[in-house]
Length: 399
Image 1 (cartoon, rainbow, N blue to C red):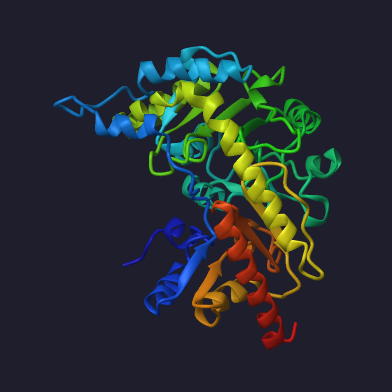
Image 2 (image 1 turned 45 degrees about the vertical axis):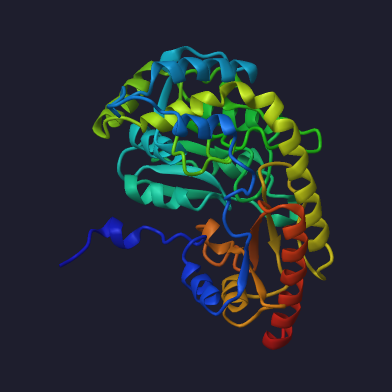
């Protein structure tokens, strides 16, 4: 029996595909520091967890396809604190940010259409594009300049009659780049001139450092019908297992089409919405200490990476990821070797090879992504082991 073309073509997660090697390492009694996946060790707020513990209804019923009104109205208040004015019907609650991106692509693109995305990019965009029959055209960015966007003319040359949208992830996963307001305005101008949608993935909006600020696509004028914002609570509240996100647009026709797709999956999870709703008003108190913690983690990882000869790595200003270009040829081989062949005092480290975050052939082959999601003591230990492993690997591979 044949599988569908999309089943064959859909990308295997570069973040998760090496897990069998990690499992075998654990079976041998080796402890692993996981820096490969964005699962923070920050405790989920008690306000969220209490909603699960205290759910008192005798029936767990369907909710509205667009999400609970209670939650959507409170989301309006959350976004207003970020200077984003919305109406409740601008918001569709989704099953995580992933579904929001799929809905955005289904609502804006036909089969065979193209979308522009700065690469390296969140690897699951590849999967979403395959699922929806859309082709990704990369806007290539480079580690040497901190993955900043190229000149507007470079972007414009990529636009064809099939181009329907530009996707931005700001702050960026996997790069940690934060686009300035001027850069967002520049992309918005390109979108206006070429009648393109902008799908802005803003799930890391709170995680900015060094005095940087986040600019939402919904705060850029002249994009009422073109701006689509995608969001999620997964990283914001360290609640990755609560699959709640949203899609937001002031384009009423687009929202109506998104709701039709939402109706096809009936409704987003009810209890998870109630849990997310409980966290709406904890923001200021919650993030003060957490941002300080992530900033310390970022500084530590960057400092440790700078001890490696011939590394190329610009300090990120957002999210909780960092990409480093290593003095090796194949980061996937290195990552696999760390799990199969190397340990220091019965411990090893798992990172994410970066090639899977690119669509351009061979780009990222010598790069890794590190997620600084462990506490400072564990990160210190992990980075020590990482550097020792890299030195040993270079000797064995004679690199």
